[in-house]
Image 1 (tube, rainbow, N blue to C red):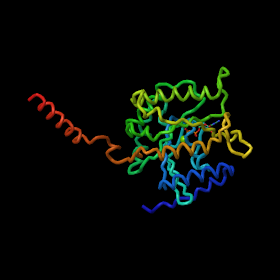
Image 2 (cartoon, protein in one colour):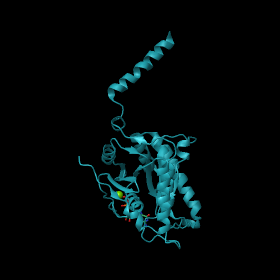
Image 3 (tube, helix red, strand yellow):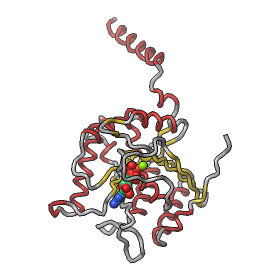
Image 4 (cartoon, helix red, strand yellow):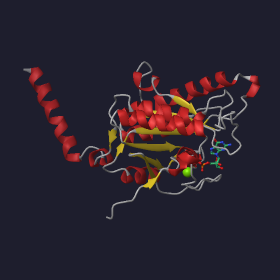
Length: 280
Ligand code: GDP
Ligand code: MG
C-alpha cells in the first residue's frame, strides 16, 4: 500500500492567536516527553457531536456532521502534522442505533484499529442531557468488552452543547458536576469497575461547544459560559492523559478476536491441575 502523505495541521492557524500559542506549547510539552504521535479514538452515541468535535480540534471541516442519525458507517482517520508532531483522530459511527448497540459499527471500528495504538479515548456525550441511562451503560460495556477495562485509564469524557443554560436556575458549574457524576456512574456500571477503583474516579470531564455561535473572549478565543477557553482546555486534558504513565492500548489480533478458543481450553488445564493438587 502506498504510504499515506500526512497533511500539515494548517487548521491551527485558523484559531485565535492565544489559542494557537497554547496549542503549540502543549505540542512542545508532548515532544519534550518524546511523544511525537498521538492517536485519539472518538466514541459515543450517534448525534452527540463526535464529528463536530473532531472538526473543532483540527480547526477544519474534515469529517461530515449531520443533525440526523445517518452517520458515515465507517470510522474515519484524520491525520495532521505540525512541527514534527503527528495527530491522528479517529471519528467513529454512533454506537447506539435505534436503542441498540450498533454491533456492525463496533466490528468495523475494531477492525480498522488493527495494529494501531490508542493513546486517548475521547468519549463524547452531551452536557444538556438530563439523564444518564441504560444506553450509556451499554456503550460503556461495549467499549470495555472490546478494548478491556484498561482503556478507561486513557479516557477523557467530552460534553458537547456546553453553551447551555441549566434548568431550574441551577448554577452552571453545579449542573456540570452533577451531569459528570451521573455519567461517570453509568460508565463505571457498564464497564464493571468498582466504585472505589482509581480507574473511573480519575477520568476527567471537559466541556465542548462546537456551535459557530460559541461566545468568545476579548482575545477572540471560544469560551464556555464559565469563561474557560475550551479548545486549549480540551487539548491540555488530552496531553495529560497521553502523559499519565498508563500504557496506551495496542490493538492486536488477539484483542480483536478475543481469546482463541484453543487457548481458552488451555487456560483450564492449570486450574484443574491446581485443584487436583490441593486435594492430595
Ligand atoms: P455525531 O453523530 O456524534 O458525529 O454528531 P455530529 O457532530 O454530526 O453532530 C450532530 C448535530 O449536533 C449537528 O447538527 C451538529 O451541528 C450539532 N452539534 C454538535 N456539537 C454541538 C455543540 O457543541 N453545540 C451545538 N449547539 N450543536 C452541536
Ligand atoms: Mg459523526
